[in-house]
Image (tube, rainbow, N blue to C red; front, side, top):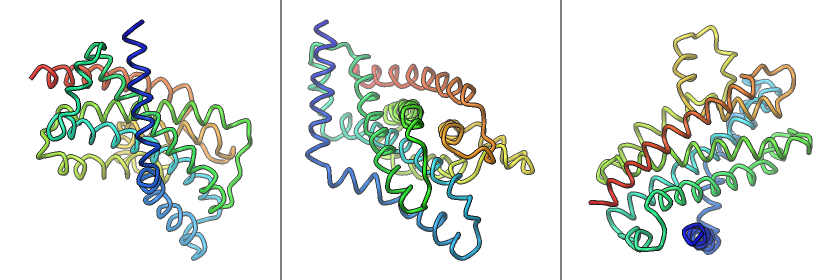
Length: 256
């Protein structure tokens, strides 16, 4: 019980620090996705290069992308900083909490920030694109964002503990860009059947199943998406895999 009490205390401290850095966090949350919604959902539609229905495809995908990437970035970068520069992780390791639990706290904290990033974007995106979702979709949307943020945070823990600090910027360039553009955030996975090679690549991206899960809940009937149960099953398997690898990497770094 003492370990879980410490877990809650450490998590609350991290959340309190986030509230003190609210302006920077909101800039991270809104800057990139708002430009994506503006250009792809508004400008191209007004110019006639995209249909008005495209907003129903784009908005859930961009919200999924935002939650996933914020969860990943807010876990990977602190890992690099804690282990290599600030050494703040040493204080956590000295607390009455097991090393795997310290690693899991990092995942949970990153996932909470990811969920917040997804939820706060919903009303802004709906207002910008003129899209409306039923109130009944709020709970399942939150659940999907939580699942996607947990997967992103678990991947962030893995990357943050396995990638050398001097290569972290290269890692973000090499990994983040393909994740963004093959995660079905701008298009439904089933709609690209005419490009089977690209469809296979997108199907290997965990972000795809967050985007598709969002569309399965909120997109109109005319938008075909991967069934929700498949999305959640894939995300559960990916979370277990990356959490296992990430915790092992964390423990190895902690023992050094």
